Length: 453
View 1 (cartoon, rainbow, N blue to C red):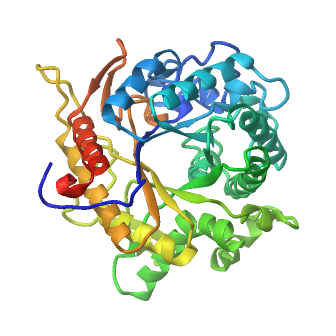
View 2 (cartoon, one colour; view 1 turned 60 degrees about the vertical axis):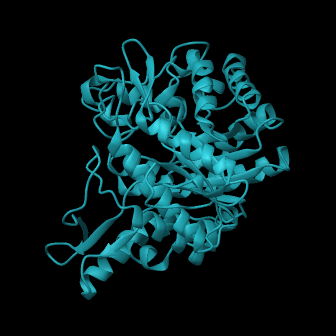
């Protein structure tokens, strides 16, 4: 580790890794699992690079025991995984699939036996295709289906799982999935995107209520992907553009969750395509939660459009980028955490994803020397420590991701893992970043000045 930064995090601070069912599990046609929107999307020509899919992914469904051993070696406190909705309710509602629940039973029991806290996510983008065929997230009926799904999962796992996340990144679900067609189900409609966003948020509120009833002592939250948007200049036009993009990316979701209202400036712009908001919707969305999950990858400068209208993200000269072409901005993480704590006052914050894609290779000695990822993580952990010093109620940090995996429409081309996967053989090779993170966690667990980043 470098001697450039020394930090201590609060007692009980959780160190972990994150995953998602469709990106990791594979076994899409085994043991009664139903079709998801990602199965259908991947089977549609031209949607995913090289026609790849999550059909096998990391074969976690069969190899989870091996991966729990990796987590034990890493020394993590927590593992964030998602439940595959079509694996436990193949049609989205109604008939349960016991074999699907059996898998999550084994996974949760294995984690607990290893001393690892399960963070269970109810929805990480793999909507049952049967529900999409009925209209998907733009339809209010999907909210009720999600509440039913939440109830059966909570009844099954609530005796062992105490940390629950309702949704991961509603912005991605709504805009990439329904607005711009880049993710499943591949629709291109702003009307559908705003309706999906409202119903995802409403289903979050309903799920919190269900979890409170079924698992009264549970810690419940939601995860948003947030970024910090600096005006590219001090001009009114650039400031206005940055404020608008912040409304699109951040305030549209933070406002309802913590203030019980959509931001008025965005409502004024989108009023012609807003979905119906019924009495009680906003109160349900704003139901108190125990924590906010923050997924953070990048931040950017924003300028007014070239014609003076709209907003555009502009590159900052001299800023390094990841393999996703995202700028590396750890200062943005600090700004996001401080801003959220100041303006929205969540009780607790967890960084539920932070990581970077780089073109990793196994060298002739069988090693993966991913120095860029190690440095990326070190800089972002340092930024998190600065937020803690600024009195942000940050209580955990989870790396994305434990394993290289299926990266949505990018297929297997982008690698985020701290463990390398050779996909033809499924061989796991811990990278240099894995050992760096293991040493950091050990130092933090042992206390004292050893935890230098």
